[in-house]
Length: 76
Image (tube, rainbow, N blue to C red):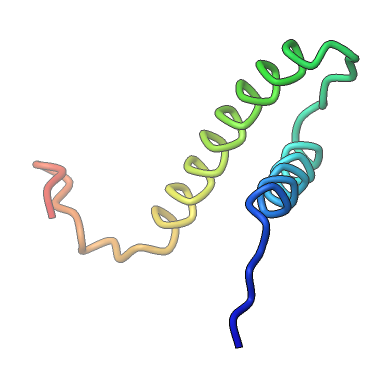
């Protein structure tokens, strides 16, 4: 059985998924100007990605072994 999914359908789902993630942490712009909305959403997705990466690195830092990194050289 072959299932074909429309690219537009997937993009719309990804957009709403990203928008939901952004809404939980940042104020989402309300505008009727589609170009302004697009540029603001790109900016907010970059901010959201940076916040996610910081959270992941903080979690890894807290849960990593203390003996894993040499404090004098900061090398593994």
